[in-house]
Image (cartoon, rainbow, N blue to C red; front, side):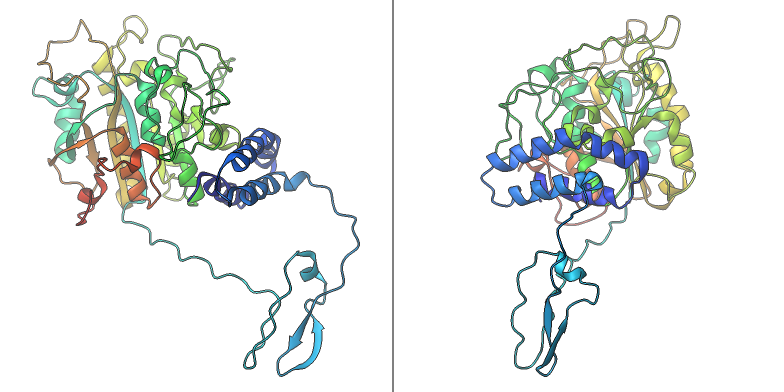
Length: 450
């Protein structure tokens, strides 16, 4: 599915479930999105983007469209079976409001109506895992996380025996922006994401995606035609939420999709929220169509959502504050720092997920790391790894082998590809690389995996 096709599918899927304020938000923000999509359609070599761009613009703006004053056309007629006299296609004349080409003449053996419905494509059968929870932390190093001298005892000694360890999960670089964006969109690092997006900067207008889906140029906020996992999940008519700890507006009230103004630097308070740990706030495909404002929510909403399977999103991305993620130097004075803070966060969060009906029914919990934390001078020394970007990740599910180890080389592109495999989605950008491996086949006991 092309980027534009996915955006159209997402908009149509959303239209079936939204009313009132939420729909108004989409209509109000549609101008920016539609302009970008139309530009993509006009500059692309693909012949199907123009109509799709027009369709998206029409669907988003339909609520504000004026009622037509054109006189109604006379009803079309169709042949009666057996060659009898023609009859109106619709007593109400509704069929004439569609600008459809004339129907082909009936065959000798079978008359055909003017309007025929195209058979819908068969939907893929849902896989065994239908609820994925991803918890994103800062790594103190592989040994400090999972080694014998661990600084995260809850992770290494309580959770590790219950799940399967990805012992060769390795980051692309040390910055959270590079890895988290890659893990939800397949986009490769650039100079600004490697610097953890010092300002909330758009890509230049001249940036475009190559044949592999990578966006050229330097930037942090991706163009509207660049898709994320949130776009994919929504277009598949599944639900997603990103849960951000401590996310509040300038007044201190809980708010959704909080991020800096364009080209402004963020200065998070110690122990507070940082948009740098919120990758979904960096995609115009989510910002401009209202998805971020709807699905990127404070962590405080998770408890209520976990109460029922029906209210639990299919894909949940959970990020604590930089302090509770384990970033040294980001906590208030006197509070636990680094790995100790991250481990304490897990002891509070993980039991809620493991007890939830959705996890018990068909869930997968992934504890992963998307950045390297500075060394904590107050923590006990641990052996250093030959590869400082090796961080590991842990999978917990009734489909995972308790105490098992998967030593295949994985990275953030693999994380995206694996989730796409679980939900039977197309691969985005770097996730489609020929050397990128997916842990989903091994997790599900499938043969012929990557």
